[in-house]
Image 1: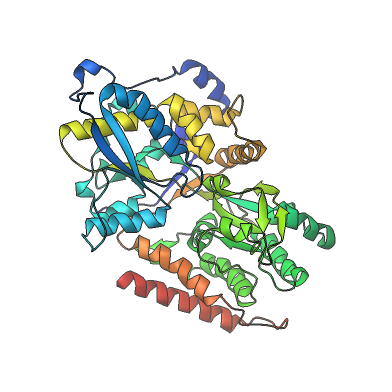
Image 2: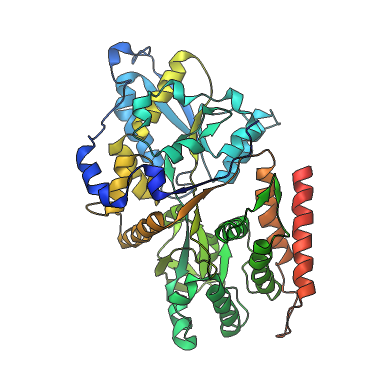
Length: 466
């Protein structure tokens, strides 16, 4: 089993160059059109009898899917020439694919067969058993791997092998429904500048609760991310082994305002994604992956069926005063089941095509991600002549450029009980704060705050021990 890994990286260290050298690097790097596997004469495949590989992925779910478009393009071109057909058999979110992969691995009733290709995080491989998954290092040369950001590659190493190849990366951002927020700002004096610190965010949350007649101001997709990143940004480790350091000064500092807001009903306790809560008018702000940009519509439908236009403001995640900017490195990787040499070859052809410069950059932008190749990443950081779908994307990438230039990136650790801990943390927070416990403007006692912290730690530890 993989040992505990918690890693940090700056943008400079990740990519191996400084921002001032981006223009020079982009001009020197050749456009990699294709593969060391490109020589058809070396192929073990027969185009007259193509190999079909099934694929489960997370890019698009029930809306437009840039991955599905790319699969169609691959099948019409390189796949047709080589004798490879990629068949998408599931498009869902990360949690659902995690559960489905683990269920299929364990042969649970009704789970079905494992796909040949799939996207997931390292925690999923730990739950599946990584020994059944292909080592991409056997299909990429050292020279080819040098084209990719080393920290993105490192995240895909599980049990000593490159079992998840990086496709796209993201980080958390703050999305604000400016249609509602601007009116709130006009009447209260709270501005977007107040949302640059957590102290300001919680003050805004309290004011909004009063201004709106008892509505929640913000929601985090994963409440664990709030606690984990803020503790680390305050200079303390979040974990001790596989357990949360729930009695550390930084954890106490981070937990107190969250618990205070939750006890008063100022947080949105909905399950699922903050995008959904924002689109229903249940929250004004959402903390979620930059890939969420794909899922925002142009309107919000309130519970009474009132429809209003949605104007988005996009901001970096706030910091506690005095904290250093530490942000999350997100983005699943591509895994493939071990198989025959012919099927592994076909998987490698698809993986290399998908991560080539001319494919990976537009794929990343369409989904709100950052590309994984150094040359494509350099183009994003320069920000010129890029195929943004609309002004929302343009605004988001301006924010991402600043975040990637100024921040240290945190990669969550990999250990056996990480997944139940991550899921459990968010579930317990939602459950504890689903209804206000302190009403009518009464103060929240320190005893009540301490009790929520103790309950959280006890319940999360119990889930890890199952």
